[in-house]
Image 1: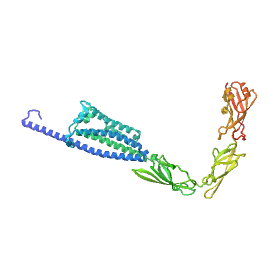
Image 2 (image 1 turned 180 degrees about the horizontal axis):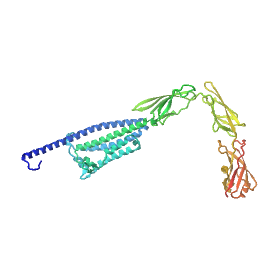
Image 3 (image 1 turned 120 degrees about the vertical axis):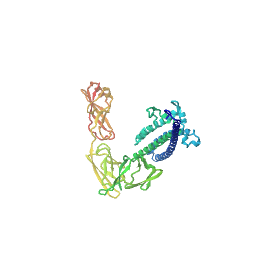
Image 4 (image 1 turned 135 degrees about the horizontal axis):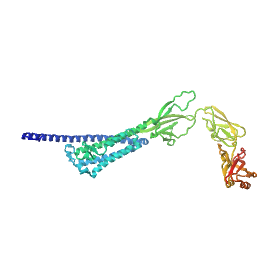
Length: 529
């Protein structure tokens, strides 16, 4: 407009245009400042609402953690971490905003058009081309928030929940302090790009926006954590199938009325209180334990017949008690028609030993059951001892009467076997089908014994004598378990590598010396010196 020769009138017109443009620019600047102020107010109101939701959320989570600690304790601990991290940066930003507003007159706090000077933050954060300690403190606070929050999100207790990766990306984007590229392609520091030379109201609005990011991020994270925990609790992997029926036992030919239902097996779901009765009698605290998501009854099966368990399992939900009714029955016995007779250690009985046996009839008390057989004596209750005599079999007869008067009479036959042939040993070894290798001096002091390999009873076999033979020397008869003087003399004439034999071993059972054992297998020894 100013190029060339202009008339005074044209110059005046041009000057009026410049003034008009300046006035437009000035008016636009004031409108922008007002817009920032209104935006800051709107975001502040949203922050209040979000804070209230977060407070309500934490209160509800604290209640759940108190009601079901095993289910929500870990989530509550992580939520507390998130709240602490968020509160630190939010309070720090609020403090800076307070200092910014303190530079204004009281009547200018809501007059956004006068909040156009950048002096406060420029003087606080910058000194020439460098940052002041306060500016570095601002950066460090944002970096600490980002680092601490990502550490919580990477924890296995939180990372397992769905949607956590999206929150991580949001935090990395909204709280990044990396250099920013301008329109001209030049990269400048994040703090300079966002806060240097900006009007006070614009900088305040940016900090309010950061506070909004903090609160919204906290809200989204806590919501996903709670939703994820509830999803885990409601997952079908936490259920198993149960058979629901009107009674616990049915007779042959009777219609079965059972049904398959789902039952929770979550170990973290435990009732806060239990009120149960057994046959009308209240159960005491020592008669049940709460473990693995169930109420385990520690009671006796009681007398014969049906028993009823009634009452309520009481859970706390939203601070109120919710009762889950219990109405179940169980039968202590079924109606039998035969006795149960079994040998505790084998399907035969052995002559020469005391065979422990259990003889009982389901539904009949032990003191009402009688059992008879040659060599059978009662120890206590349903426990008996059988000491069979001669013959190849023995028949045991059990008799009893059911409560309804029905008699039960059962006879079971058992085979009688003799104790197997023992094996001779030296120094506790039998050579495993071969010879025991040992030194001459060791043999002189070793004891001769006998054992029953793979026999079901522990018998103490006592050796009373044996014969000792060295090739080319007369056989020596020995009393006791060790070589006598004659046997040792013959041993000294044996050569290295020569085999000597111990045979005709005599032994008996320590507590039953009258039983005659089968002939004991000999043992040979190869001399190593």
